[in-house]
Each structure stands twice: as C-alpha cells, then as structure tokens.
Length: 462
Ligand SMILES: *[C@@H]1O[C@H](CO)[C@@H](O)[C@H](O)[C@H]1NC(C)=O
Ligand SMILES: *[C@@H]1O[C@H](CO)[C@@H](O)[C@H](O)[C@H]1NC(C)=O
Ligand SMILES: *[C@@H]1O[C@H](CO)[C@@H](O)[C@H](O)[C@H]1NC(C)=O
Ligand SMILES: *[C@@H]1O[C@H](CO)[C@@H](O)[C@H](O)[C@H]1NC(C)=O
Ligand SMILES: *[C@@H]1O[C@H](CO)[C@@H](O)[C@H](O)[C@H]1NC(C)=O
Image (cartoon, rainbow, N blue to C red; front, top):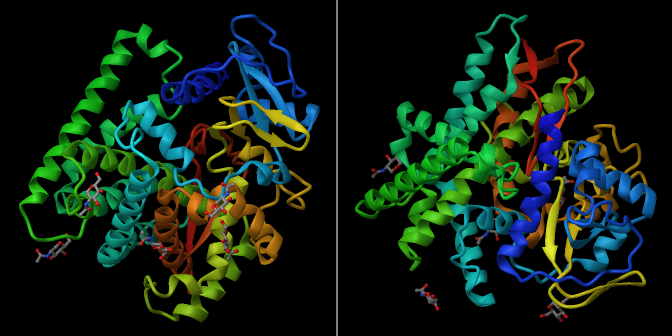
C-alpha cells in the first residue's frame, strides 16, 4: 500500500516533469470546478497519495465535480477530462505525436526530434511506423515460431500445473521485440537475459517515474538506473553499427538505418520501441489470456472464429484483419484492463471545453481509465464483454480515445499483432482455465500490470 501511495505521487510528478521539460510553466488559475490545494506547496499531491493511485484519485474527482474538473499538482493547476463528450471537444485530430512517446522521451531525457518542426516530426513518425510494419512483415514466421515454442511448453505441462502468466509472457515479449527490433544477435539467450536485466532496471524507475527527486536522493538507485541506461544505449549503438555493415534488412533498426537519421536518433528510437514495445506487448498478452481464462463463453466463440477463418493453418499477416472477434477481444482487453490509464497534453493555445476556458499552457489530463469505466459510454463497464464492440458507437468512442487511427501509439499496434498470433495459436490447442479463488489486482503505472504474477492452468483440446 505504501508503495502504491509513493507511486501515485511520483507518477503525477512524471507528468508534470514530462511537460515542464518541454514547455515553460504557467501559473494562471483555471476557474474550473474542482479541488482547492490542500497544501500551499504540494497542492493535492497528498490527496492523490491517499486515494492509492492517480487513476483512483481521478475517478473520485470526476465523480464529485463532473467531466471537467481541476486540481493542483504542487502549485500548478491541472484540468482533467473524464468523459467521451468532453474529450471529443478537446482532442485535435491533426496532432501527430502521441503522448505516450512524448512522455517516454522526456523521461529518458531524449529531445532529438522534439525541437524540429511539424514536418520533421511527421517524417519521423512515418519512418518509425514503417519500420514496425516492415519488421512484422519480414519476420512473421519468426514470431510464429516463438509463440509456438511457448505454447508447446504449455502443452507439455500436467493439467493441474499453475502457469505464471507474467513471467512467461514477459519472456515471450522480450524475445519477440528484441529479435524483431534488433535482429538475429538476440537469438542468443545470453543477449536477451542481459537486455531483460537492463530493461527491468530502467522500467522500474521510468514506469512509475523518477522525477519526484526520490531517485536523486538515493545514490544506489540512481547508480543502478544510470548504469542500466548506459549499458542499454551502448548495446543499441553497437547493434546499429553491426547492422550497418550487412545486407539483411529485416529488423526494425535496419529501416531506421536506411533513412538519414543520425546515429543518436536511431539509438533513441530503438530505445523507445524496445522499452515500450516489451511492456505494452507483454501486458496486452497477459490481460488477454487472463480474461479469456475467466470467460469460457468468450474462449469458445474465439475458438469458433479461429476454426472458421484459419481451419488448421497457422495464422498469417493477411488473415489477421478477418479475425474480427479476436480484435474485439483485444479491444475489450485494453478497455477492461485500462491498459494505458492516463494521457497528458499541454494546452498549446487557449481552448474551450463546454463553457470552460482552458488557458494556454495548462496541463490537461485525459483520464482514459475513468472514461473506459464510464457507465454512460459502456453499459456494465466492469464486465469483460467483447460483444460490445459490435456497436458502432463503442468502436467510435474507443477510437477517439486514441486506441486506433493516427493518434494511436504504434507500439500498441505491434502488440495487437503479437497478441493475435498468441491467441490464435493457444486457443486452438488448449483450454485456458482460471485458478479458483485468485484475485488479480492491477497496478496503474504508465502501463497497467497485475500487482502480482497471475496464474492459469491449461487443458488440452481434443
Ligand atoms: C485539421 O486539419 C484540417 C485540414 O488541414 C483543418 O481544416 C482543421 O481546421 C484542422 N483542425 C484542427 C482542430 O486544427
Ligand atoms: C503500417 O501498417 C498499417 C496497417 O497495415 C497501415 O494502416 C499503416 O498506414 C502503415 N504505416 C506505414 C507508415 O506504412
Ligand atoms: C536475414 O535475416 C533473417 C532473420 O534474422 C534470416 O532468417 C535470413 O536467413 C537472413 N538472410 C540472409 C540472406 O542472411
Ligand atoms: C533528410 O532529412 C531532412 C531533414 O532533416 C529532410 O528534409 C530530407 O528530406 C531527408 N532526406 C531523405 C532522403 O529522407
Ligand atoms: C477495435 O477498436 C478500434 C478502435 O480503436 C476500431 O477501429 C476497431 O474497429 C475495433 N475492432 C473491432 C472488431 O471492433
């Protein structure tokens, strides 16, 4: 619980840190309904800590003050938007950066590409997406092989064996992301293990935020983080150097190398993709398998679709769009798990939502986690029900929140492909069963993850 409280504060400060890094601060009050600062210096930070997480704090704030509400991060006023209608008024469909990438880059202290103009930002975004598309296309058989190895292992387990999802699926995500992003050097387990160690050290600080200054106060934490980051950067640069000299352009980094990005930019984009790609892919897979194991009906329906579309063939890239129910399952997984619960933007010019003026440079939070459980938008919001995506209105709301289209983070699209390969393989071979009496709680970091590992058992289909 204490951990959780500390996390809430640090997370908040990340967001402030992330945008302050890029923009000067503003002190103007907003006049929007909400909390007064309970403390001159800290604003509402203690209230957030008391609620257990920023997501829970926002849920309560919007419950009390409605869909447009304000509070204070330290001395800084913040406006939070907590329903689809108000987000619709605020979201600029022309924006090209996604807030996830922006947050991550500023947390890492990476600024290249942020200072450039809109055209350069757009070019880099296209290149990044293109690199993801290329690697998926060229390495699809490899992805299938990695998934089949894991499913083969599960098939060999006795039926009462408890399988730890986080451990296994993080392992799968690490192997898939490293080999697809960085090439065959990561076929070696020793390379993946080293990558995983550094990844964990970096994400354990960045995933919850270190800009609260607590890391700076602990020289051992700071040293651990900095060594991991430096080692990871060194590995990424040496990968780029090696791959420059060869003709095989199959990995994510190869596409970047064929462009005119600087060495530093190639390293930074590789860092962002491997860091975020692993966490988002692993957690999408973990939550999807977890929800399926608790819903036999959904599993049977998915099994039926897989048999109808694929028969006994392995899934292929061009068949994926036909797996509509599978996509509904993944959409509903992102929604129910609140996979990325918070996004933040800085108000670039004065704006208006309902009758409220949002002054220039105000920090605006999109309380995605609150919107995803809003009963006005989703009937029975806590139920895992992929059928809700049969409705056009559900798809539109979901898309508006930035889970598809040009606002979506490209790592999520990558994760959908990996998760589709996983589900289409595992669900045709095995029945996923939940372990009775297990309560799975989420920890709402930058990406929501189960607090403790979560377990399933599997039974062979025959
Ligand atoms: C988005 O771009 C279109 C076409 O360039 C323009 O007409 C529209 O006003 C822009 N919308 C916003 C909110 O900037
Ligand atoms: C990548 O692939 C997706 C889906 O196939 C497509 O919508 C998108 O336009 C592609 N992006 C680029 C930059 O080619
Ligand atoms: C290129 O790399 C892929 C994946 O690492 C590998 O399967 C393929 O054999 C390589 N091709 C050549 C010509 O080296
Ligand atoms: C190289 O980068 C510059 C901007 O830095 C851009 O204007 C130019 O079109 C790029 N050239 C190629 C071949 O991508
Ligand atoms: C899943 O959600 C996206 C919006 O993010 C939407 O475009 C897509 O149609 C949805 N898929 C299904 C099958 O409902």
